[in-house]
Each structure stands twice: as C-alpha cells, then as structure tokens.
Image 1 (spheres, rainbow, N blue to C red):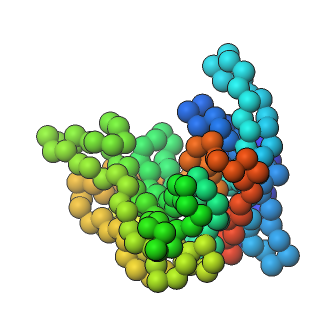
Image 2: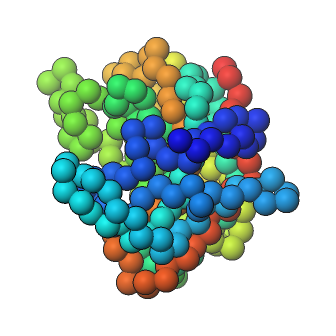
Amino acid sequence: MNQIEWSKHKWITQERWGQIHKDKSWCWYDSSCVKIDNWGYLHLETHKNPKTFDLDKKFVTSDYGVGLISSVEDFSYGFFEIEAKLPTGKKLWPAFWMWSSPWPPEIDILEGYTDNRQGYFKPQFTTSGISIWNTPTNIWTHKVEDKVYNLGAKTVPSTTKNPASNFIKYSCLWTKDIIEIKHDGVVTRKITDLQTLKYFIGKKMNVVINNHLQSDPPNKENYSDFVVKYFIYEKI
C-alpha cells in the first residue's frame, strides 16, 4: 500500500478497502496518477493504464487508472478545506469528501460531474453535487423516527469563476451544532437540524480527495489533472 506525505498529513494512494470498487470497475486507484510538483501542489490524474483484478472470483480488466488519496488519520469536529482547480474532460467525477467507518455517515464537500461536456462552467450547464448521507439505513431515502429524510446530492450553480481554470476554495465546518459547506465562500449546504446532526456525534472521518470517472469514457486516451494546492484541517 503506497503512502505519501502532503500538506502535513499522511495519505495512502487508494481506498482503505482496496484499489478498485467492484461496482465501478471501469477504473482503479492508481498510485502513478498521484503526483506532487515542485510547488507542493497535489496532482490527481486519470490515464489509460489497464490492470486485471480478481473481483468475486471473476477476472476483470480495468482500463483506466485514477488518482485518489485517503487520509491515514481519522478526523473529528473541525474545519476542512482544499483549494483546487477541477480537471477537464468527459465523464469526470472529481470529489472531496469524508466518510466514517463503519459507514455511514458521509459528508461530500465537493462532487463535480462533467458528463459528456468538457467542463463545469455555465453556459455548459454544469453544476457540482453536495451530499450528506446521514443515517444507518441506506444512502438515498432514510426513515428516522417515522420521518423520511432525503438528504442526497444537492445541485449548486457553478461559481462566478470557471472551476476548471481557476483555483477555488471548497470547505466544510463540522461541529456538534452545524455542518456548513462552502464553495468559493458561498454557502452551498447548511445543516443545523439536530435530528440529522445526531448521527455524526462521536464519529471520526476519513478524508478522501480523488479524481474519478463516472463511467467508461468516450475518449479512450482520457488524460485529466485535478490540481489541489493544499489541504487544511483545524480541530474544533
């Protein structure tokens, strides 16, 4: 398991549970897609790099490597932030998120989807998804004390800057009283409901930053680069 040190924290270059997700086998977590440049910026790339895996006793060849880092440390309440420039290309899915073990809950600070476009900026009609999975039942519809909670992805408009050509700050404030997510200083999600927040009490979160592919991409070369200046965690 490859490990790096970046932004004063230690990271592995795959998910904690492995190099490939059995339900997203068109790509795998490739340590050669994780690079740090001379300025200390993190680069999470995608490229064609076929590798064969044994998934449930069935051999599957995954064509594309993607860059992902997962924190060695688990984090509790605090302020989390990256400043990043999103990758360009089709079928991309960059993200900055946190999850608890055992899972759920999960907090998705940033999810970007390019679909069949090349970017995230209007007028290409692209938005970023914000999600908070919060209960121990399932991730889409949650029944809590006879109430149904739908706290899935919330679509937010692109910022006034193009996030694929500008560095933008993506942050989350997580305390016992609030989960507040901001993109470029604008609040995109704010949770103060104690019925929701109670599922995060006493939890510790693994932080993940990744480039990814939504599906088998139409461009068979499919190189992209998700550039992250830094990661900050301030304990509260």
